[in-house]
Length: 461
Image (tube, rainbow, N blue to C red; front, top):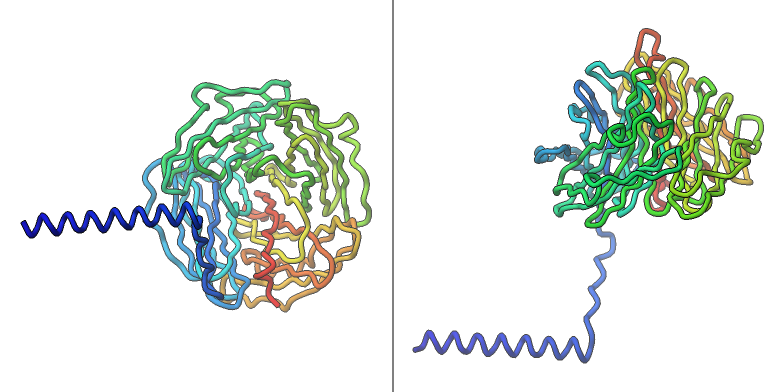
């Protein structure tokens, strides 16, 4: 009897608490969460849908421009259950190079950081009968919609989409392909595709749209959030990757590059309901000029198109777009390897430039683009990945408005596999790493990787 009385008393107390809580919420409203304590250690994550293949190696570069160590945790994702995460510490003012096998086409990496801010990107070296190098920065956040412009399924060309879900809940998404023949392609097996937690997947575009000069993709997420990139594998032109553009695209895209053979292709996609308007400008070392390739505007609705452009020396292409059109830049190296980048939406005053060379011999390069109307004065300093050889002293580079300049060759070649911190004392700019590496003379592979913008709170003083 005593036990039954205790139970009844407990139930009565619980009922009173619930009733009181309901009254307070109705009369007073929900109480706001208290603010976190000042100086709380920050944390975040980078999503790296780099892809891979048999015999491939991916090197993750994680750079810490701050003045205190940052802990990171790296999880490798594929179609199966994830491997156990690995933990590292990135010392202040340095970067960490983490080579790892990437044996599956869908191979991806998830980089979490704690106690500071770091930049992250990848350099993928193809193997197993495939050749070339691809480099890109990782993505700072997931999204519910991704636009991936770069893709071709012509003869000897394979196009893939790499989609990763690093979270603890399922994701569901639909893939729509836009082609240069003015038609969109949606198939039943690429509609409402489920992706389990902590998994990644690869989709071979050739299986749905074979023989197209241009194939772009939209990844619309119905449940959850994901990250996505494109991966091009060519029998004749090596490999290249380009991260997706989130949401409805960018009104302005800045696409730096250099040290190529002068052949560039701009790949534009139009997911909108009306014809896209595109205009472009080339910023070279000594001049800026309008691009003539967009005289007839951009692609038709639900279509994509490739526009050939000739450049010389360090050159940046700035594209202004309407109707949600999105562009990527595909650049041809001096040998057979190609490079791709989705660029940046705006200039800034501080960047981390991650390496894009995969091994020795190496010919690294760094370009600085100034799309603004005022000069930019930029100081370059190394965030070295090892004690030897010693890093050279910082250098200062002036970038005139509407121009693209190359960083001093001797400075860039001193440590080809280390990150560089670029900070402007005046003006804004967009940097990119553009490097050759491997082969007998170091020119077998070519890759381009745009810089990672440093958040204002983490710009070193």
